[in-house]
Length: 506
Image (cartoon, rainbow, N blue to C red; front, side, top):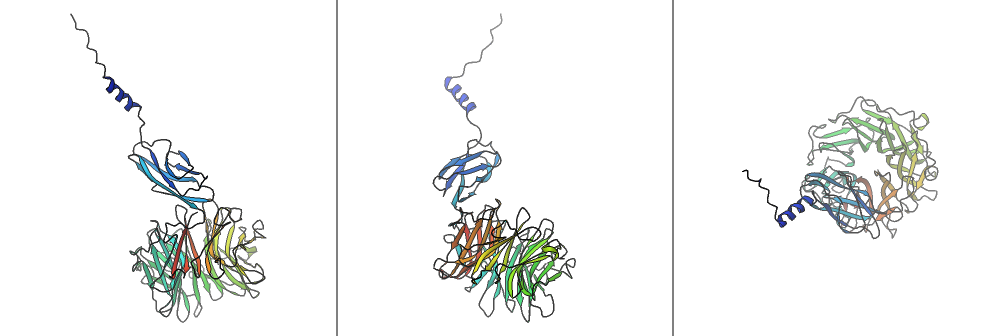
């Protein structure tokens, strides 16, 4: 007689409960962190880019995304929508979820205000060899560090100078000599521009003086040493004609690694194009050089921008009728003037009120229009920060400001020296304006809406002025990948004098 089959024993109640609990437990890892600086009554929208989930945060403190991430999944937290009149940045926002993540940090600040985590309460003034110095060019490096170039005074004549800073504004002592490079070439030398290559090398452009003056390029390794593979011992000196006075003020990197330099030769706009080894590019102009006379004299190119079709827009200052005017020229890739610009001449001279004006910066807008910034002088001989917007053919854009011009009369006197276009289409302007006592020059940062009006959510009615207790001005502007705004120039207040940097909330 067969035995009846043995039935499995029922699990004890506690064991069954634990099995069911494990089966029902949520799988994956939580993703969250903390927000600080969010203004009362304001909303911040975060997105986890990989999974696509979003989260609206309404107050400072801890946050957690609604859905868990699969174990081992990559994550990337970004700001999808900034709070009104504030900018926010995400720190420690990407990684792999091998456990619950609770250390994503989001910091917010009022747009146009100083980011107090940078330098000393948002700014830093760095003497170079304890002598007066000013920065005229600025770059944000791939690792977040900052590189500034300009000049230092003293010692008989000014010297070209560089300084590198950590992301928080402290001098990076691993660069050059204790964070600085100062070039004594036996006569006056100045840096006005810099370009950082994909390999970390740095080309600095400026001028060197002697019996006359020449364009000057020096290439450095990422550590701040001269690069012997460029020019002669890392240095290239270019003259345009015997006895001419030539000054380099702008550098433009080209997609193939070549460099275009712009400035002045005598009274003309002057351009020179260089190969990657520093040699002049004979395929450009005549022997690598171009001179463009216009008006009755002038001070040449101050800034350049590269169009998608390879044409180059160069802006600066030229005299006509006894007064300096905005000068804007467009060149074909080979160095010839573009006859499709300026009614066939290839350039335009723009006068505001019959007084002295100068263009210092240029930005190409997504719709093909051209924004030029600088200083204009009104009929009472007061100089103001100003912009002009041109159509793609060089004609004034009458839909902008007043007949194409916009003067920042809310900044009493001053000038603009740098422009930067934000990803959202807003335009940043930087230069100088008086401090509240009208005794000194101060940092001026402003932002325009895409339509051209001042952004009321930025600073005070679109303007942000930073005082240093002495003269100060911005000469260069750069955007960090997280959107924060870094500027560089000069300041001589607060018991120090030299390269001045500051960082602002976007």
